[in-house]
Amino acid sequence: MSTQTSRSPRSTLFLGLTFLLLLGGGCGLAWLLARAGVRGPLRIVLIAPRVEAETGLEAAECRALGSLIQDHLEHLGGFAVTNLDELPADPSASLGGARTLLLQPRPRRQGDQLVLSYRFAWGRKLIQAGEPPWRVHTAGALAPDQAFLAFLQSFPEPLRVRPATAVSALLPRGAGAFWDLVRAGAWRFQNLHLPEAIALTERITQQEPDCASAWILLGNLRYRRMLDSPTTFRQQQADTEALLLRGLHLAPFHPRGTFLLSLLKSDNGNQREALTLLLQARRHQPHNPTILTGIAYAARGAGLLPMARRAIDIRDGLAISRLQPQAVDITCLYTGEIQKFETSLQEQPGHLRSASGVLPFYRGYLALVRENHALARQEFRSVVGQASAYPSLLRLSEIYALILEDRKDEAWTKLREYEQERTGMREPDGEFTIRLAEAYALLGDRASAMEMANRAFARGFGCTAWYERSPMLESLRGLPKWNALMQHAKERQALMEDQFPLGLLEDN
Image (cartoon, rainbow, N blue to C red; front, side, top):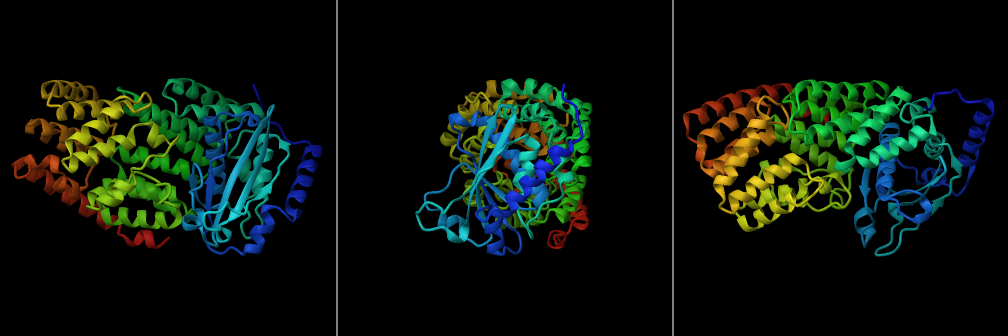
């Protein structure tokens, strides 16, 4: 078991000399940043590292390391980070600009040490259809926490990150615990390894209780298990929230931790707390795309479509969204901007949205809205065939596919079984519950559809625009119970509009 220890004078001296060498090198990233005279928010395009035999890392471990690097750049530097799997064919057309920095880590594991080299290039120097003018920073092998600190210290004023004490709050001090954290982060994308990932991360939090990243990852993994579990109860949700709060206590306004906590609150139907949390975080992280995605998610569930839409616009001005959509922008479906919604559904290899079945599910859902039933059935069936898909999406996709195959009796039976399993639970959220209402309506069961629509509202989904616009719910409109539901929904939405005016976004 690893333990926290204070640094010896000798190691402190060594680290100080390392910093001097990094800061004094005329060919390093510091030199380029100083010459560029960057002002305003810096957009960093973080390109996935190449997986090579000599790195000593698997592809999933490289992704997990990339997430840790992103967390450091965002939380400590306040940068706007966009992840790309690879550069586009013509990077100058998409990534040009004085405030855009291309950064590709070149991590390598040597025993328990980490080599955190990287290459970088300024967007303003990109040449059409040409290879970027890369500059290379070569790092030495260090203990992992020291390697991260040396990496961040290569950024000079005015882009200096927070002091070393803030860095130490994010990572384990022990090298063994660090590599366990990377392994657990890699397993987050693999359903079969989820129990192992949770057990491993729990052990890290016991060994190093002051490591914010471990608590946030544990909350993330528990949240993922909640989405996968057919029997999730309020106590499990409260426990998951406590884990994320523990991490945020150690690293206040950590973007990923704040985003995950806001999702948990929104899924519990508490968009008010989610928006309050996110708007507060945005005052400390005004250039963070992930926090803006969280605002869009919570706001659309509350029916605040102008706020959700504005958050998307601000986010897309910071991130390179045309190359790598930050989220599935369901808001744009609700506002009738079908093309923008469809654009957000492009495949992202290796990303959780691709691996979890979210993208093909919503491509099928969009086809259903457009009444292209053949394409919708094809997309829903593709979700059923994904081993790593969220079980909730897998089951709902199967139900939709059966409806479109005119196997309605079988679909109704499966839908009823699934609904009964979820009785009394508050997960998935109200937005997912409205999908069940739409399935019942497609089956012609108006009574059950009406009941599920009421349940969706009770679970926090208050977007009156979609209640009124969804083509699948057409058979309910005009019913007395429907009219009563819409009156309640509009009243609650009006209260939220008064509490969260659009100007709150502009004040940041």
